[in-house]
Amino acid sequence: MYRKKEWLWILGLIFVLVLFLAWPFSSEQTNEVTNPRRKIEVTVEGAIFEEKTFVYYEPLTYRTFFENIALLLKSQSDLSGFDLSEMITSSQTIYIPYQTDAEISSEKIHINTAEKEELMNLYQIKEKRADKIIAYRKNYGTIETWEEFQKIVGISDADLGKIKEQAVL
Image (cartoon, rainbow, N blue to C red; front, side):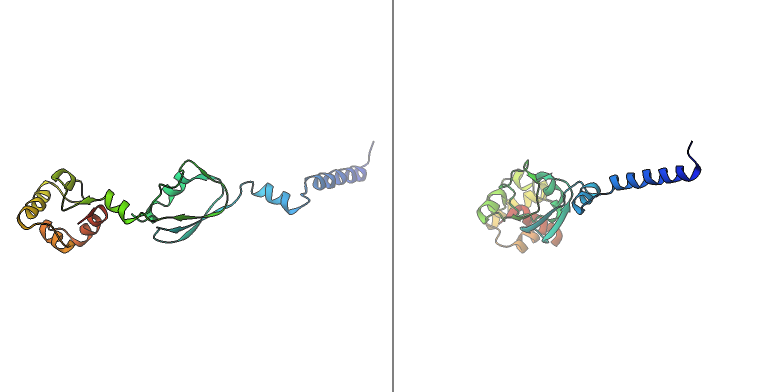
């Protein structure tokens, strides 16, 4: 049979052969083995509070992406031009357009013409405040400024800011 030295020599050859076969030959093979997912960089510009670049390692839909950045979107952001089911598969820059003034004003509640039920849809405006607005319009005409509106309903500056996003004078 084989002696101890011959066994060690045979095992050494087997070890070297296994290492040689398992060793990657190029950096591309190494990259595929260690990171099979492709890096996707998405830069967002336009109607957003802060332009940023986000990094993902797998494809995602526009819907998922916009849900992830919802807090960065401005209230005037117009996402209607995007197919929300479409996949983002490569690095790109996404420009989010602003809504036009006509689109914004048509979606907002007009304080000087709105009915009581419409006014009650506004932030912090319940039945009593809606009645105050309607009574003021009957007695004095249209509300001209946001300061005037604020005095009529008696709300804070922070609440007024939220109402401005929902309504126009």
